[in-house]
Image (cartoon, rainbow, N blue to C red; front, side, top):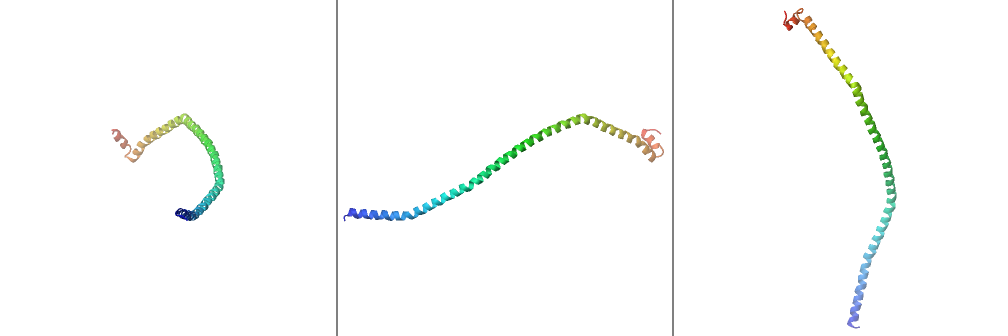
Length: 137
């Protein structure tokens, strides 16, 4: 055997040793990839019903939102009608009611002023209280 053949045998032995040392990590890597594949498959199988349920829920929420939009539009129309009715009521009834309230206030005030001197006459000295206030004797 020549030196070249010995070197070739050493190189072949080193290569065989390297392959044997790399087999263990490669086997572990294959197992890890298999587990990852299984996990992805299970995740996809479990997520399909979840996504279907979420899609159904979104469709139902959208239909409820459409109903709420209709209700909101109707409430807006009712509020406008109530506002118009309130304005009409205030224009038709508000003016006369205010006038009646002012008339009642004026009438009460006039009656109080009329009764007030009599109350002073009865409390005072026989009519002299009223005459003193007016500057008469």
